[in-house]
Image (tube, rainbow, N blue to C red; front, top):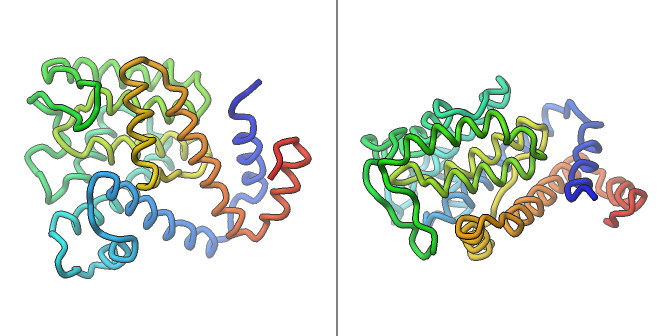
Length: 260
């Protein structure tokens, strides 16, 4: 049985409504940028609230918050815009795309290391997995890029997105910004395949880290793939609400034997 059949059915339903009305698209885009930016940064320790993130993205400085936290919000928004450009071009996931996205993530924060592979060894706080020696990073990233362009393409898009995220942070190729970059790469793959971008929420942080560490230490990606798949399913719900078809989708799923 195809474990992603329900997600494929949801995508097929969404495809029926494409292209979406411009006003609906604009509204969905604004909400996505805010939610994705807030949660991705919060996972990494940024203390801006959801509302403060919205204000920061509007160019307003929030008292008591660091300049870095403001830059993290603005940079992440700009990185999302770049992901959308790459999706439009169906850009292969290669080292050029990875370094350019990372450069945006660390812009005005750590110019020296932005878009540049680390030359020091690092530890992932609280994780059992240890990333490879810095000397191995260029070779492992070249192999990762080759895998993304070949064998990964044989996987279902949701599994491919999850594994790309996981294998990237396993290498941990940059001094900082690996988590944010990995979630950008995950959504790049989902969006290229026609799935909606998904948000790993800060409330899921413990399960998220545990599933990643399990994948890195044992090679068992099942928990992490399931976590990503659930997040993808949830991301469809925003579209149903915006389109006003929640009841229709529930009936459609019931007819397919999935329930609501």
